[in-house]
Image 1: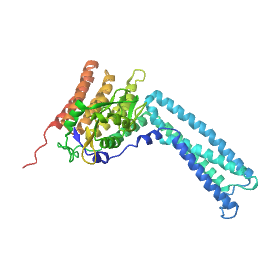
Image 2 (image 1 turned 90 degrees about the vertical axis):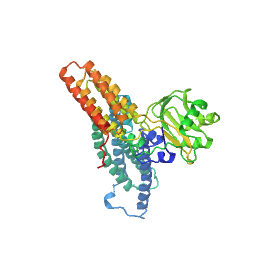
Image 3 (image 1 turned 60 degrees about the vertical axis):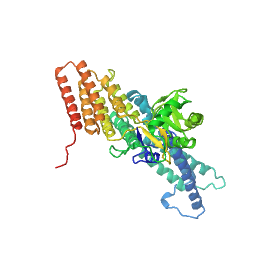
Length: 469
């Protein structure tokens, strides 16, 4: 286990995922339209004030903004509102159809990727905002009984400009939705999420991590002793709700433990399913257990599904799920599985250059307060390959691509342990092939790929030549 100061581990460089609150808001169809409707309302207030100023001859509008009589302006706004609300229905129907296709073709867990797609949300928001703006402009015409000749020329012109924007957005939406339901695009999008999650959760490259065997200044207990105290004298803190652990507030937990002069060890990491009444964490001393239990309910976020926040394994599972569906007898789409394997190799290659450690988070005085675990390298490699290896039995093309991908990953490994993990998977792939592939020529190709993997791992284990003369 490696020690980190809390400040260094929390503010380390790398791309960060959004907070769980932002992620929850982003995975909705109402947030973007609501914001855009509010913006449309504010814009209408501004344009109406300018129209009143122009009506009272305080300002002068360009001649090309004039929209004729009140009846003409009203007819224009009615036509815009009617057309836009009709298109909203069409856009909504297309979106539901895309979600249905995604659920059937890619799996129900892929639907969140389409719901959180910003292009879909902004398209719906643009049309709804235009409709609301047009209705407000119509109300402005009919709500001034003592000024029957008042026409909000600027507001009508802005509504017409919105209509042109809506036309461009509609063309974009048709292109976007047709592109987003293509399997290669879906797989590439999930792979990009995987790479971002790896960068966010494991930003430290191998070689930049400087472990310290001694406890940090101000801490009179080494981590090994704290672990022993937690095992022997610690009190279990039970979970209060069922669900997948989506987010852990590490900073909040460190502050809580520091205030109580306690040490916490988390039993679960984001992505694990938490069962109410089962141990969620261990705390020492025992007297702090009740206060920690109350605090954990605020620092932990659980829900009915997994998310990418602090859980890069979820993206791996999504790619594996698509590949397994493609390899099923009902689908039999080998090329989709090969695409998933290629992207998995890209993710594992990047992961091979990052430091995966069990972190000890310390307070500002250097005292260990929180002991948390990250998914191990072996866990993530096995999660990527195990189910694919099992589903690919008797499929030489998939087996060969698996071995090729493992070779690519092995070239990026940075330790003998990582290479042993990759080679173990390669050995199991070869064993499965020998048991399930009857053709001798196919077996020869598979053994050749396995030998290339073996040679790559052996070259990595060789000591670097000395530079001494």
